[in-house]
Image 1 (spheres, rainbow, N blue to C red):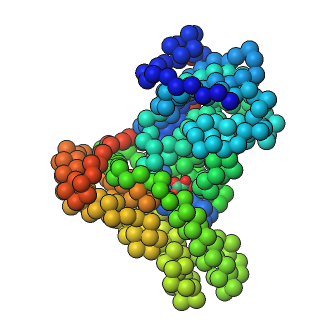
Image 2: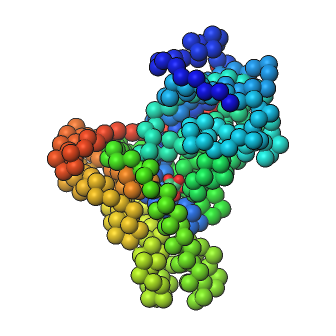
Image 3: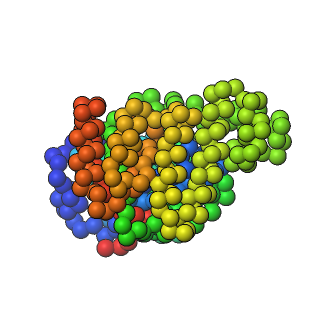
Length: 390
Ligand code: GLA
């Protein structure tokens, strides 16, 4: 494998001297509600956002792949015969190698190709830039080779790449929404059977607003994530003694939990309470949204944040402050941290008339409190991944 550095601002023709013939794109996501439920066989309600990763490229005559990352101004080269012996090197190319390896497991050997890749999903911010690159790349490989895998299979393959090669034990939400989203909708995902339902999310008076705390999610967040997963498993193990039919927290009702919560050690009890009540909130959200009652949905977002903060303990003071400031603005009817936590973003529902004052107030007060600048993105709900010949 060779790596080169380049000056910034390149495009496919400048790098490779010819015209790209294939294109793929996959978006980042924001989870509206249903946090830390996916790996508990539960429910979540994410939507794709208007920030994506794209690949454009063409086939080569040999068995080599070359991918130039515009974001890193760096070229990654690989002889496909060397793929088997590639190890993780904690570099952006890990995502590519992880995906290539998962195709190889399915006996799908790619042709040689060269491509340019670039993205505008902020990294380490909890908007799933990793899922976006994985899904965009798996759509690209599927398309250029005409492998004919379904979108859902490509999402699952991408999740396996992240679990097995990149080494992050994420659930299925991010890759699934990136692959399957439809504009003007959120996706209700049943993470047990992977059934999905599109929930119209297009309100005349309200926008989805993401605020990036600019506290990067990276430091230590993996450890906390895996610890939470383990605590949930422990909760199931204990509750199973009383409720033998359960196999995940998804199977425990709120009433059962209230009946048996004292059997659980305090910390495990809090983790389980979050997951069980969060699943209920997702189900209620679907009902309210179905009736067009966005204000009621907003209230559930607030409850979700409180639960993530107090029971699941994955929020941080910056995110709590952002939620508090956001809710203090007239016209903001719901706000919560989104994604895994320990940094990253909040998501809020804001009246379109208040967008300007929301941005000003949030930026000013957040800076006052943290001496950090936050970024405010008003987003739309976008389509999921695509592949096309150009
Ligand atoms: C990360 C993971 C997802 C999910 C969320 C928390 O984004 O990749 O699978 O667990 O955290 O809801």
